Length: 451
Ligand SMILES: *[C@@H]1O[C@H](CO)[C@@H](O)[C@H](O)[C@H]1NC(C)=O
Ligand SMILES: *[C@@H]1O[C@H](CO)[C@@H](O)[C@H](O)[C@H]1NC(C)=O
Ligand SMILES: *[C@@H]1O[C@H](CO)[C@@H](O)[C@H](O)[C@H]1NC(C)=O
Image 1 (spheres, protein in one colour):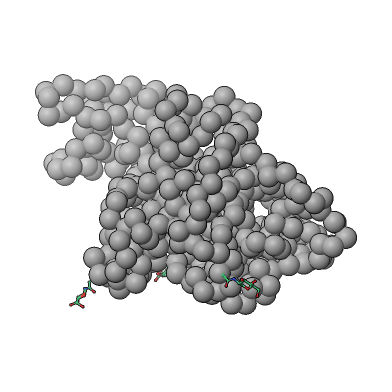
Image 2: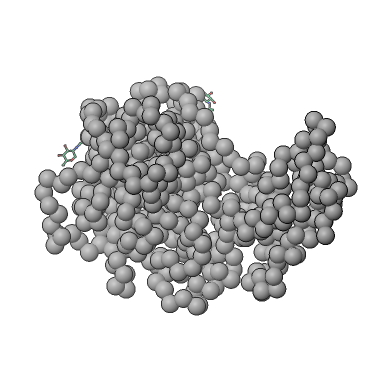
């Protein structure tokens, strides 16, 4: 039985930065008790001792984050009942489960007769389910906002579509841009990467390879915000509306985090990969990374172009509602932006054609689709992720066509050859929204979208 006094101590210790050591210890005892109670014998055969250590560290971190803010400074105390503590413990226990672990990869490889191979990837083995969930920053299903469809002038000739296609092979002059693997770090900005990258490829393709500059996912993440794009930076966004934003506002140049200080581009990505765990492979995280602020000037002081002159625009944006039309669009103009639902097994993808076999739903994820093919009779999309080239198949993956909703959220746009300053065409996009839970449906002052 947890006494009320002990719980108050726990609460105070968890929320204040400089608590006396005996309070911190009491809190540790309480959380230790909670963890032991919830950690069933069956789980100890699932996880290795190291993984159990990580599980417990994640559990403590998430439980402490979930404690109500202390009012000790104001001379008041929030009382936490045994029930509340138990609820906090249970929620933290569920969210603290390692995002990937040895046994998960092993089970997929041995117990499932499937079309892909799993591994326990360095990127996720240090993360909890909650940490990993943050990377899935795309609203999917009912919450995905579609643009208008672009009616094809000529119907797709199915027989003219090849069995397989790879944009890197079709446009070798742009293979470095198309195949450039980026890294969103611990930020839910996949929606900005997947849209900015496909736009980047299309500009290179349209200019016959003369435009090789990297465009800035940071600009999209930070500036294509709630009021313009119904998007929330590192907390998730709408890839199709980012395409719409490219037609209205555009995006400046910007390399990767590692390019900061080179002066090569206007606004490189600002967030590095980090570890929540001291023994992790990356520098320590400073709490949860927040979205860098929107700016109107380049972060690189030595970059020669002015911010407004450096903005590159598309001239139309649209959603693709048909797989064959999507294929033709990729063949004619380059990669497109897709989104799908991520289940925890996906994190362990190593090679082959992914299809969901086990694990819980983590959230929506946006990616760049650069081709398709057939492997062992299974038709797939060829996809580039934004989780660094150390994840998956050198940063790429293949996913069974239609799996996890991937055929239902395809968007792109057209660019003209004379970018960076193309003719801006006004158009009236139409949102197709089936849901009523749009993240920002209280906003009516959006000029960009006329629903
Ligand atoms: C990929 O990860 C490595 C190692 O953490 C890092 O040095 C590199 O900058 C990352 N790549 C990108 C594009 O950020
Ligand atoms: C690219 O090449 C095509 C075919 O050779 C040509 O018609 C087009 O004008 C070129 N575009 C640019 C921007 O150079
Ligand atoms: C910017 O350019 C100046 C002059 O060329 C040089 O001295 C300076 O080191 C550069 N700064 C950075 C951050 O590269």
